[in-house]
Length: 483
Image (cartoon, rainbow, N blue to C red; front, side, top):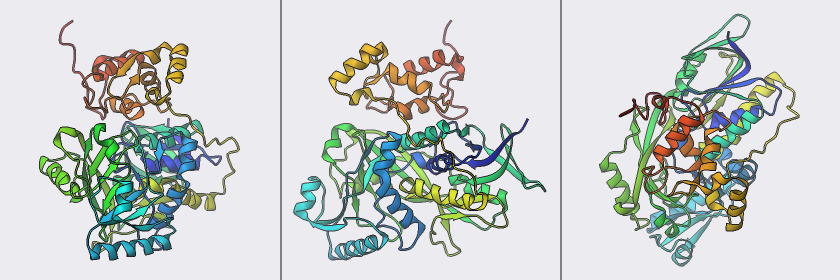
């Protein structure tokens, strides 16, 4: 039997999850189709995790408008969704007269875009803000910040779920057909769905979905960026992101603190055709460390704990220039909202993009408001961040808080259990990792990984061979070594 919706959203990255949340403000039956087994598996979880100030984007573009809007509202968003967010500020450092002129132009553009508080600071002020930064002067953006992209996307999706949205993971869309009555049949690898509206938030797959909808002509390029993650030992040396002077198309390799105390280094930017290869070659890691050391000289192999990469979907015109966000409703594809080229600053801009996408539907559909919509969501309490008194209270109420599963990140059994029984029904190792930070410390799961796999198996009554690390086929075990 086909499942019938008013709206189907294709893609559960940060923008798809934001659209789902904003769409839930109306009396509509909404579903989300995601090809992966969780939210945030692709571009949304593979970036610098920076909330940008909006000064790096062309005047009058949706990128500039949505970025500034998203930046200015993020304190309230973080409060509603109960996610970690730090408004650290950010510096773009320079050394030459050409750098200085470029930063003055950046400030001019930023002010027109609506960015707040931008200023040129001298070397003394720069080193007061970031003692280890290398530069003669800098542009300071006080409202830039850092966020956990996993927690943000998960929180958006969970808030949408609690407001009635259905999430269907492992449901890759392989065909779309509209009948004579205006009803779409969306074919997935797991079965078919019927819907009156479709919203394309497929990210790296958005051109493919756009073609299925009958909207042709978009050209994509993927830009792959590699990153290093450094141990928390060096975190105190970097109080805010440090960037070079940007070019017209690229923000450059930078160093960024995380909300959890690590440091990330990157990204480079290589055009790729394969949107599934996230490997990081050794030569790229060497290049990242060498280049970023010109900004911040505390990058040493002894502090490397992991690497990762992300691929951004860039919409190009006929001459190869990168274009603006596309948020459109086209006559040739009735009852659809099509989002193309949602790259950086997509994380910062997710909710502003979502509001504009939802508005296109609301203007045509005129749905009633959902009077029971609740914008607030409560996350998993992080034991490691509590006071000694609060830790004692938690343990007294639930003894599982007294058992540490992940030593590196001080993640308790109680937190792992909450993550296993998460509202979205995600059951992979990486799903637990994203929700608790277990397996993200210095040993990268060497101590806790097998215990977490056992907990998933026992709590969800799974056969041991069905416990997955992340994607289909990533089975943790093929069987028992001995009975």
